[in-house]
Image (cartoon, rainbow, N blue to C red):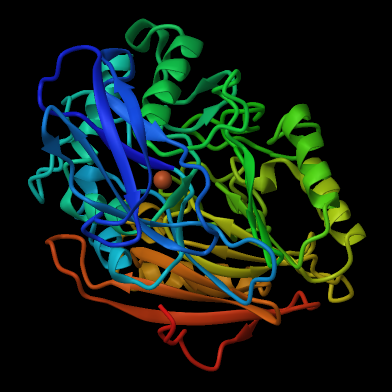
Length: 482
Ligand SMILES: [Fe+2]
């Protein structure tokens, strides 16, 4: 999918010429054509270019009224026998929270594809005073014009522009692409008096998202359905899920205040349609299944905190062991069913890729981490936020040593979480080969100013046929053939 937008006050509608070539100067055109840009789609254009070679790097450009666009680079998916593929995983870029250094750094990495797991934009009206990055428009957005203006603001960021110019992207939305803590029929941060009718707001946000992101809809007649599978040759299926808007029932605890229990079993995170579809996807044989998903799938137990500290853990359930009921932990029946399907497929080819949690984790997927007899069904890699407020910023008690204490408590309660970092911002690079999948966590030096420095803070891997993680011997090397 190639994407652009006409920004030069064009007539409405206006013809846009596109070209794809192998050379950066587009002298050797292999495909070209014309599309129409119009106010109806906010003058965005998307082309699903056909007839290209697999596993090939191309360059592309657009032109209208004699004015050329910047030239972008992209790469087609592999087909047939495939020895390797490398993905960059990102989520949660809040404009007022920081500079998108992670995007800029990832733009320079040697990856075939970027997978964006949601919160590409945030809907709030934060002023970002500390770093001088205020949201535009300066309010919580709710109309189609609002969401379009918000996307337009994000796309002025030079690091995000570079990321899109360098790599293709497979994107799915999460809650903030519409509204904080959203489910199918509402959101915690939705007030009908201020924001209008929920389904209208949701449709407006989805429409702007689909205009501004190069998403290939599996069924254009159902633009609200973006869960889909991307085939990566005979090596992997990238199955991207929508755990937020397609079918999610309201979480057991969805307000600001903790409630007594989340032991409500009959809730759905995927909805009937997506669940049936996923089951079908899992029946197709594949060397690796990469499940792109928004919320953490592995259990996450947070020890009960002393009462005075409880107010620092909104969203966690008080009393006994706390869990976040907006994650898979709040939808236990559906998780059990999914693990059962994964188990039926035979051991060791499921790798879940997760965003949402604004922190870095590597987990073995078990239902009960305290049961040593339970064999995990796969592994999960959670990418940190690009900028959004970290897990530690949100939950650690603001006392000296509070962050280390929170991390220790969580690690102690969750032995299946093999790697935990609650503070860093950045992205994950996932390298898939027939015999193993390795993930490197890259954390940026800062988000308080624009800088390109970042480093690998952890490398974990899972071998084919296994479901236990081991530390990788070294971070991924650059690939000589690229
Ligand atoms: Fe987020």
